Image 1 (cartoon, helix red, strand yellow):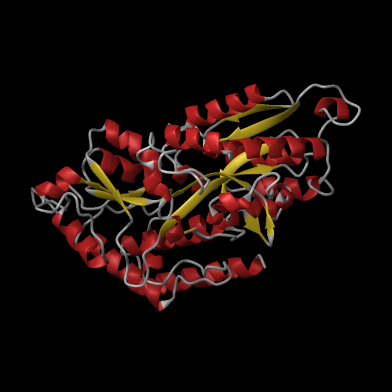
Image 2 (image 1 turned 90 degrees about the horizontal axis):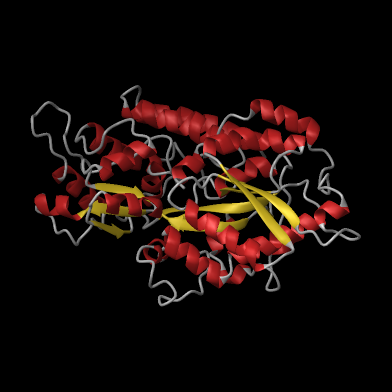
Length: 439
């Protein structure tokens, strides 16, 4: 599954109107009769849970295998999984939950959980956590924390990863750079990117770029650069817009100049475009996640992996995760069944299988290097979890802040449609209004 596809939200105005009339009092809701759910007085038939997700990419077989293993491991719970593209998933999800025809459990990017939790379509899962069930002490803490909204946990981690800097070793070698030494500082990052950019015919459009960096429809790439200078889009607590802060402006100006004046990267890339640029050997570096390792290997690229170059104020990258959620309509029997499945997904055997077969790092922190010896990349993506930060964590209106305000502002600046400080200043005011309205 492409993580950047998860971050793209769809407009939910009509669905929200539906939910305002459909969600009241559904905490115990219409989860079926006792006989259908296997509850008290019912038959011994398994509790069936409908599970929706968007794992259509290279990691789909691993998801399908773990679900099959769970179904075969016991007779009390049966998972019926439906996999669809993420845009279809989000188009269908809210209306289906409101009408009672939707899934019992879902998997979604944790950045999206707050807007659904605020509309009471998911139920809190705090009581699923504990040594007797899903032990948070052995899970990546930031992945668990990312499921929280207003003091309650609305999810259980399904996966977690950081983003890393990929670099093409052959292109480094051709540019006279050490192929085993990625840039470690902003100064090196910018210098390397310029040396790796080639405009052979002098037409002003490079045939080879030093960097592929997307400005929309992507996992956050530009916010990483802001964080590295002490700035950002919103504060860590999600309450204050920081896009107009001096640290953010300084970072943005530095990298915008490198893109627009030194042409180290094309303007207007979506996430998939950035991947293709690196995969086709037309860009020498990209910051992206583990889901691209297979594609880059198949393209014959000899690449390295490292933390993105450290900024003046911080050595930080993006952390991102998908979490399981449970419909507010699910009754006690379905909740217990969901807990059984979530615990199975996060046990040691399943997490080793997931890491080896998906390339993602495990959710668990107690697995050894020997446990993961068959997964050469997963350990790399998990080893800097303590240097990762989640984007817009806990922000209820993710879509409005990211897609409606921030990304268009960044694109205007990159296309020379206004002064950076003025554009970001106006965007910060709009973001603050959104944050205030959700308090």
